[in-house]
Amino acid sequence: MKLIFVRHGETSHNVKGHIHKRGDDALLTEKGKLQIMDCANVLKQQNINGLYTSPETRARESAELLAKDLAVEIQIANFEERDWGDWEGKTWNEIKETLDKLPLDERHSFVPPNGESWQQMEDRLKKALEEITRTNHPAACIVTHSGVLRALMRILKDAPLEEGIAYDFDNGSITIFEHKNGKYTELVVNDVKHLP
Image: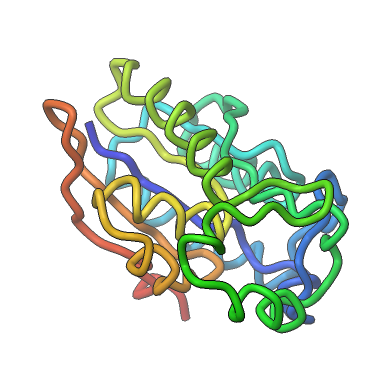
């Protein structure tokens, strides 16, 4: 089974460097829509027969654009971004001021006020990933978020904490892993060659 991860297209929040709030209604910018349409051209060659998306508006809008070209029905899956609780709406730089002071193991288990720890997000993503890998799809596309993709790198590569936080994923990027016999093999990570 091929797992194809797409980071949603650009939003105005991304342009400003702000963290999205859960359930916010931020839509894709015109550039973001074009990024996803460029993704669709690549994904048409992948024989996708499963299309999953985070329930967040920006991911759903991206998935809807893909679904038109891929002729695949969208399914909502639990691949939404980390719940930052009271920190939602802050910039990443503001959040890093607190997180960068913590040792990595504490950062992993740190729960922002009324939010979710990195570890809790990983546990949630593992379950969502297991549900998809139990299907019979030869190729499944998952539309999700940058933080989710960073967490998935650690899961998919069975890597240490340091490796997961080292990644940075671009809007409209494509990441592909092969899943076979319970193991994941990296094919491409954060591919943006299709974007102008």
